[in-house]
Image (cartoon, rainbow, N blue to C red; front, side, top):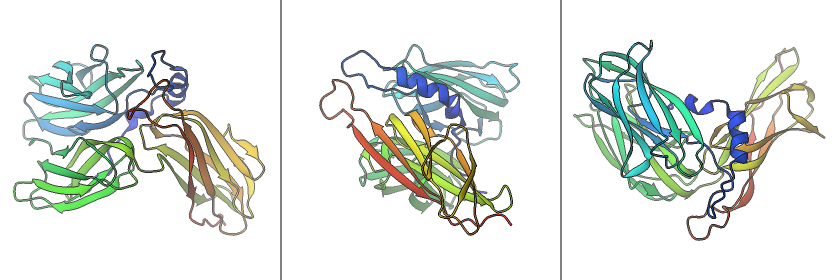
Length: 356
């Protein structure tokens, strides 16, 4: 049974308030970014919900920005809260984006790694939970390592994996939207070693690289894509019949796949040809033949979803677009400064017949 993308539900906590906090987080130093966002969990080893043997382990949590060493922490509790394991959490000396949680003398059972990550620059924080089980009969969880750690679109990566099923087909993806990266087969010891190029559409930021074999063994590493492809924001626009007779409904979900912190985002849904608006989610602005939702600040992750229902007499197609902008960092000069821009992306649904 193949498993899908790594769950990132820990990143969706109180997103409305986080957006407004980010909008107000203007740091006074000369090269501080105009906008900031809390850390975003990109990869973990082992992956959420995995099983490991009952012995000392180092759990690795990799975020998209450098962390504050004194304000970032993690603890490991049993699921019922009755047992707290002895741990030590510290940043990887080679990469301040990676939190290493050393677990001493674990006991068999199911646990939660509760983490609190604070951005080194802005001081904004995020919290989350990773599930982990210690079992006597569990092998070492699979792992994938990527080099170099930073790459441009189209550049070559070396991917090395171990701990997977033996002689099994394996697929690798990259990015929050799991773009195909490569396919291969493991050897007799469950390892692989191959080269692949970063797809041109992978946007700027620290991106997950996932490897999964035919038996569902999953590992996630990361690579920093500098500048990257376009657009940084994409959307899914899906439709379905109903809910009432002669009606169709559309769901629009924009997703910031990059580490750009965007602002003044407009999510626009155009009425389908021949359709008559029945209703939409609260907060939608009606402008002529369009609906518009506004997002003051869009950090990395999914927003919405936004819904609208129309009365139609024939199959309807929804057309949507997203306008967004990024502000240049204050006072910053040189190659490390992210550019300012105003851009957009589009999304169309498939034709949807009204409910009959």
